[in-house]
Amino acid sequence: MKVLFIGGTGTISGSITRQLSAIDSFELTLLNRGTRQGPLPENIRTIKGDINNEEEMRELLKDESFDVVCEFIAFTPEQVSRDIRLFEGRTKQYIFISSASAYQKPLSNYLITESTPLANPYWQYSRDKAACEQVLMDAYRSTGFPFTTVRPSHTYADGSIPLAIHGSKGPWSELMRMKEGRPVIVPGDGQTLWTVTHSMDFAKAFIGLLGNPHAIGEAVHITSDESLTWNRIYEIVGDALGVKPKLVHVATDTLVALRPELNGPLNGDKSVNVVFDNTKIKRMVPGFAATIRFDTGIRQSLEYLMNRPELHGVDAEWDAWEDHVIEIASPSAFC
Image 1 (cartoon, rainbow, N blue to C red):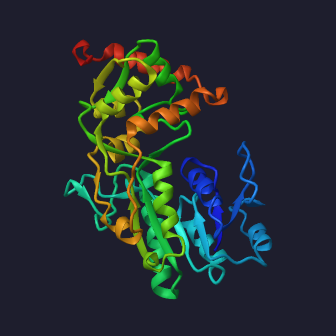
Image 2 (cartoon, helix red, strand yellow):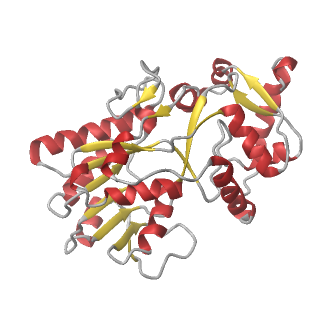
């Protein structure tokens, strides 16, 4: 089966790439700009180019066709429309990576299924993903364009640490605060349920969708069945670091008022209970189950991060902001 990944080296796609390269029945090609560092398996073909340059892509792909095209780096309806123009007639299945953050906020039912409405008034990113899905559904209904939508939730691995908030340079500063015994902020009371999924588990289900006729015209989310409170997530991260983290609980509204860019990631995502019903993906991919518990998976991700100094992004601005917020928070917020 000939498969094209647009992207293919990120947290989610990287795990899929590694697993897929070990299966003889797949012929994998990556299309990207070649800016990511690190070796790829020898049996993976690469096409170097910018997918956002449609004319360049049309020339590069003029003699190409694929059984499956997987789009990991499209975020707007315009980008998806471009892909439809490029790949209509060139693929039997186009898989778009959307986001579970597009689901209804606030939820009308605690259990999220694929039929939960897509409506997120807090986060433009999520609204754009929902709009992308609509473009694909319209194309499927009008011309039969063979799409599948996949909605990940919080997927981690290879140095990606699932924390509720951190600065733009990544989680390193938060982890160092924990190791040094300095307090870290957890939004709200920390009792919100959250779902984190190891990317190797995600990859198993995703590979089962490739060329799957039952997935055409469908949307499906792929997550773990393990739900943890944010307090527990931070405690597990701290335990993996060998410390007991000092948590300061600060109301989400306060954090958003002090740093408005947190509105989408918090009110539109991480401050809402998320419990997923994975019946649909298990029906489409018989035998699938997420088997990597968070307390196990986080140790792999931390080990990866610790061994790569280039990922140790000290964020002085974020660190100072967090100190300021903690200073003005109630002392009783410590736990």
